[in-house]
Image (cartoon, rainbow, N blue to C red; front, side, top):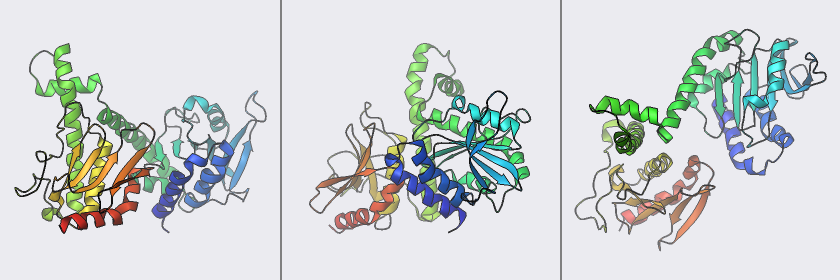
Length: 365
């Protein structure tokens, strides 16, 4: 397997086993040691490469240990501090990492819970670990643009100078992307005011802000959906792709045709996750029918994906309103629904064969 495939394999393992991991030691054994070994390429059983429970006396702190030290030519290159799976990574809880970074030759420090990896260096002050990471790797949602940079940390391709030179740009690009993601999920007042100022000439009163807040949120969602549609268009062959259109006149439908981004009920909130799930199901279904025939309708209890905007031809339902778990509902030939739990949106692809069978069944009628 190449590097990206190895990383994807570990990511899948984390998704499948994360609920069974309850302690820090279990996290190390199941997730972190495989990351050091399989992804970074270091021999975890060779003390010349990986030193567990690394000790260095730090001032009055005697005998403190860091979970792992990655060695190269007898020098510490990387320090790794571990937390248990599902524990949030707070820099305030990484005091040992701070201290060890200052007294060793390490230029890279890692704080991880086995699912997310925060990589730090000393951009702000020499030999002092930065407060914010320059690279954040989330194995539950891998950013493919970071893979080349992560590869530079591997044993075979370790390139400290290149890593440090790129760290500044990576740090701020990553922070900007996370800030944008936060605003796209839930626009704050400053974000809303920014766009009001671009489209509204009057005074921005409280009433105006309240009027525009839902419009900014909806425009943001529509923009993201347009971007997803554009990527789908490219994947399906450019000009051969047709955007979602109203159903044909002879389609049997009990409601007006659905549109990509307009909610029929103002109390219904179509989430980005629902739209992303819809695009995955649509991409799968497009092997059997034209893209414009696969549409969605949102409701308060579920997000329906239909063939020809016909509620007698249900392809799938997304049950994403629950706080803890998410499900995809699939149908048999009698239209009986069976729910399947989803650990991530990617797991929808595991049901591709069933989705295609359902589409063929309704398309042939």
